[in-house]
Length: 118
Ligand SMILES: [Zn+2]
Picture: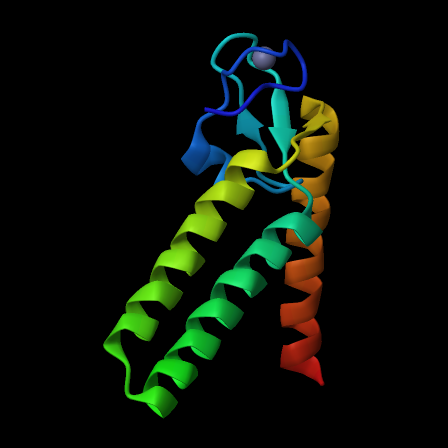
C-alpha cells in the first residue's frame, strides 16, 4: 500500500500505483482521492529493470555463469519493487484526470487520422 497524498493514509494499492498515470490515476480506499506517479518515474523504473536484466543476461552469457543471471534477475526485481515502494504520488483532482484522459484520446485519435491520411 502507498501513502495517499490527500489524506496521508496508506490507502492506495500497489498495482493501481504501477499502472497509474495522469489519464488513469489510482484511487485511495480511504478518501477516494486520486493520485498518480510521474511518467518520468515509471519510465525510469522500467528502464532500470530492463537495463539490469539485459546487462545481467549479457554478463551471465559472457561469463557462462548461472549465478550471475540469477543475481541480475534478483537485483532487477528487488530494485523494481523497492523503487515502486518509494516513488512519490502526485495528487490529481478528478477534473484534471478527466481532461488529461480526453486530451490523451484526442491525441491518439489525431495520430491515427494523420496516419490514415498521410
Ligand atoms: Zn486518501
